[in-house]
Image 1 (cartoon, rainbow, N blue to C red):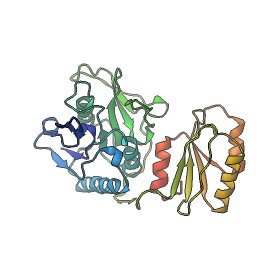
Image 2: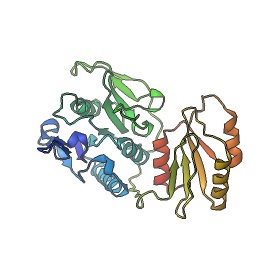
Image 3: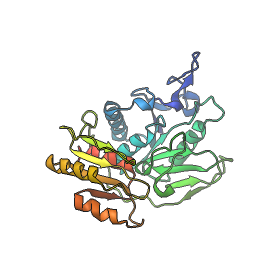
Image 4: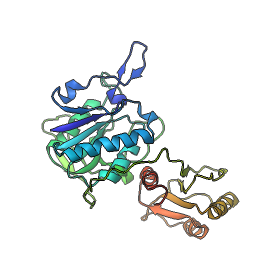
Length: 307
């Protein structure tokens, strides 16, 4: 038996008489009327916050504790899909069954939607017992259906609904999604070694006001570090760098004075070693290598600011 946890999003929406998508679609035809279904909340995912994530963590833990499901499918909006997937992967990555998040780029009644395909292959992935832990099943236009590790996803590019993992490496993919009955699964990356899920139900305390997240741009001005901030997560340009200037120096002096740890994400160990990397370390910035920026943020949030 597969348990479905429905949370809304485009995949759970229909177009109303006002021409606007509302999270009220009936998915029973796709998941079966006799399926085990839970609906902890029903939102568009841009409204996701700590309260909703806590509810979903508790809901998922309850299903695992019951021990009756061969897998869990969570329907979710695509805007914040990566955040929920990363958070759940850090908590339930060692679960003994697959937990698969599924989204759609358009409502299911739209011919352009990938929602039905994503849902079908998430069901198939579970039935075939291809892996355990937290995954996302998603098909980009013109590509095979891919199975991503929950903690490996990158942010969406602007104006795009395409989903990608770090270095474009996915857990696996279905090689011929035109013929769903005979599509062959190809594993392209070994699952990471993960500790078994210990049954705990961690909670996020409110929204992550303890984490200050900053993205670089030329001529940027760094903000003041508020009293609640415990950690700063600096994003980087694609090469894993940020500008070294007086603004950064003043910001780091402020961080040291307030005993706030500053991390830099988006750096690959296999990339070119620029002289700026050593300068960051001299300033007290801690580089985080080979990890999705979204996952780095979720780890900080989950751990209250300590990486």
